[in-house]
Each structure stands twice: as C-alpha cells, then as structure tokens.
Amino acid sequence: MKPYRAGYLPEDRRAIERRLFSGELLGVTSTNALELGIDVGSLDASLIVGYPGTIASTRQQAGRAGRGQDEALVIMIGYNDPLDQYLMGRPEYLFGRSPENAVIDPENPYLLAGHLRCAAFELPLRREDAEHFGEQTLPILEILEDLGQVNRIDEAWYWSTTDYPAAQITLRTQSDDTYTIMDTSRGNQVIGVVDSISAPETVYPGGVYLQEGETYLVRDLDLEARAAYVERAHVDYYTQAVLDSSIRAGETHAEKEWGGGRLRFGDATVTWRTTAFKKIKFYTQESIGYSRLELPAQHLETNAMWFVPPEEALAAPGEYGLKAIEGLVGIRNVAVNMLPLLAMCDRLDVGGIVDSSNTGTPTMFLYDRYPGGLGFAEKGFELFQSLMEQSLETIEKCQCEEGCPSCVGLPITQPPQQMDLDLGRGYPIPDKEAALVLLSHLLGRKPHVPAGRRRRRSARRAPREAEGVQEPESTELPSQMSVGRQVARRLRQGRRGRVGL
Ligand SMILES: [Zn+2]
Image 1: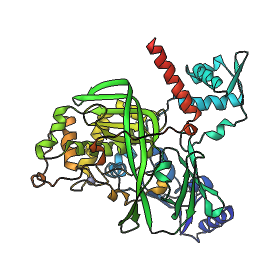
Image 2: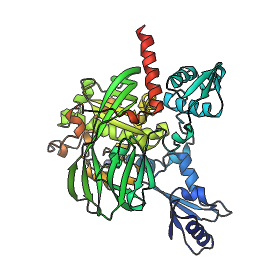
Image 3: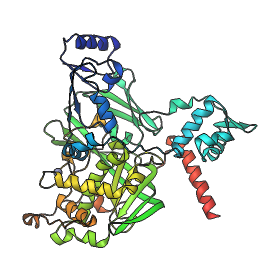
Image 4: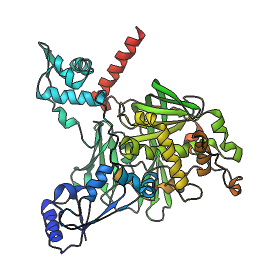
C-alpha cells in the first residue's frame, strides 16, 4: 500500500501509478487527487472513509473502482457524527434517492458582484446583459462604478483596473476572503489556504495546524496581510480553539408558525472571536495546557433562520428535572449536521447558535457561514419540519445512553485538516433526554418519558451558549472587506433607504 496525493512530485506520482497498475501495489490510500489525476480503471474495490457530503460525490468516489469489465466492491465507513450515523442507519437514503437540493442563488450580491466583475473583464457590459444576470445587474454595476472598478462610456461598463478579478475568486469556498498558510521553515512556501471565517479558529498564534499528518506550529497570524506563518514542529498534541460567538438578528424576510412557536428567516450578524486555545495530547486526549489569545472579533453578515419555541415546550423538560436549554442546544447540534442533507452543502457551510438575548427566550439560530448567505438557512426555514423529523430520528436511533457526538454532541465544525475523530470528547455533550422531550413535544409526537433512574441526575454544566451572550468588543477590519461585501452592504443600504421613503 502507498499513500497518494496531489502534493507529491509528479515523478513520484507516476511511479506509484505504474506500480499500482502492474499489481506490485495492492492499493493506495488517497485524497480526491486520485479521481482527477489518473485513470483508475483497474481497481477492484474502493473504501470511502466518511460520507463525502453529497450523494453525487459518493457515487463519483465509488466509481474509482469497477471501471473495467469486472464487478467491484465499494465500502463506505461512516464517521462518528450525526450525519454519517444517520446515513448508516438509513441506507435507502443513499440508494433510493438521487436528487439533491442544489442551492443556487443567482441574485446573491456577493456572488453576482464577482460574476459581473469577471464578465466586465472579458467584455464591456450593457443594459441588456441584465437579461442574463438578473435585475440586480444595473445597481451593482453602478456601485462598482463608484468603487472605481468599472467605467461607464456610452451606455457600456468597461473594466477599468489592472486587477484580474477571476484570481480573487476561489472555487473551493464561495467567500473570496482567504488566508494563505505559509511554511517559514521552507522559505514561506504556501502549503494551504483557509477561508477568512475559519482562519481565526484554525491558524491562531501558538496553535497546531495539521496537514497531511504533519504537525505545524502557528507562529503568526497577520490579519492585515491575510497570512498565517507556520513552522514544522514535532509535537505530541493538537490544539482546540475556544470561541466566543454571538448573533444579532436583523431584518426578517419570512416568518411562519411552527410547533406552536415562531420560525423566522432573515438577516443576521454573527460575531465571534477565538479567546483561547486548549492543548490536547494525541491518543490520550489529556488536556495539557490552556492559553489566552487576544484576537479581534470577526463579523459575518449573513442569513439565518431562527426558531423561538413556545413556552409550554420549553417547560416540558423541566417536569423531569431536565434543562430545556440543554435540549435546545442538543437539537441545534443535530440540526447543524442534518441541514447539509437537505440543502446540499458541506457540514462546514452552516453554523448554529442558541441564544436568548435577541428574543428574550432561548432561540435556536442556524446560519450560513458565508457573507451574505448562500441559501442554506433559507432551505432550513422552508424544510424545517423535515429537518426536525430527521433530527428526532437521529437522536432516537442513536444507541448511546446519555448523548454522544453521533447525536446531540457538538458536531465537528473544524476544517477537514483539523478534523480529529476524538475531538468531540473535549466538548460538553448536552442532555439527550432533554432534547428528546423537547423535540417530541415540538413535533406533536407521543411525549418522551425519560428513564426513571435518570430523573434525579446531577446538575450538568450547561453549555456556554446557555449562559447568555455578551457582546464582545470588536474591531471591523476594513482590509478584510471584500468588494462583494461592500456591494452587498451598499445594496442593503439602498433597499433600506427606499423603504424609509
Ligand atoms: Zn448518541
């Protein structure tokens, strides 16, 4: 067996391919590079580790084997998280349904501004192009003109800077703010990128950055230059960011009743800051240190859906001495992991917060982890009934006693390179019974009665979200404000101005 990945030198890759085809190697362990890099027609079996995120990717990865005349065997091994475990218990989901909800919002100002900039770079844009780009085209072109990106001459907008706009758009994440990760021990060689939303929780100073099984120590995070400087270091621990996050609900775009409570979809600003990190020893999971960090708060203006449960539902867990807030946090944890199934997005594309400072009562927020939103929370709003039914089923099917990362535990929201199967252990796991009592009540199911022996459980430490939200001091970093964000903000201001008139 040999590992195979894109980071290898081409001659090394060709050598591995030759040995694989000749049968000298029994197999390779590979990243997605194998699909793109070589013709794998001769493979008999494929082992997929973890659900790739969509049914389409699962089939594509399964197709690495069996491209020749013979039949092939494909095995998918589920991770220990709610989404994978849901699929493990429901094979018919994978085999029985093909369509996935493609979430595309062509009016998204962040994406549209990027498209229009790239289009203007190719050819001057005219009024009639709004037929293809939508009714936001002209307002955005006018804003781009104000920003000095395009020039209007004779009813046409010409690209007017020396920038190459396509270079600022990555296909990996839709957000055009990215941080470059550079290895100072190898002459600042670029070894990766991370989107700006994940950067402060991934590459904070003193933290351990994991890539391809190697450990790097983060020496510096330059917020101005959007760069993280790391250095190869052999350490026997990894680090876990301690985040302080809060959410402010903005204008509501849609609203309905659900489960006796209110469900809303609208604008929201998420603020978060890495306040500290924990050092955790590999294998033993022993906590070996804790360091405070002084990083400025980050802001994300996005879309969110939020659910305010009715009072009687929140009172239900209390009848058994359970805490409703823990139940709601548990439901949030499952929902964040189940929403990607309905919205066809990655687990890292959505976030969730339980907060009571916005509505005066514990409220569950699910939001898009992209500036301006990409429609995922909106899908959650539309399909909330299914989202909650699937969440209940996941918790009920889980064979754990008190809650685990496969059900109500905090989902792993670290970028894949930081993903550690045991990471969930470091998080407090909310009360599974409280989640079941609350969710059964909301769905109008037979009331869930927790096992009697657990009625007098010792008080658990409530998850941090339950303790109310303090508004962290914050500094907006103007250099981080992308063109897309400026366009979205100006469009919003324009809309509000019109409403005011
Ligand atoms: Zn469980």
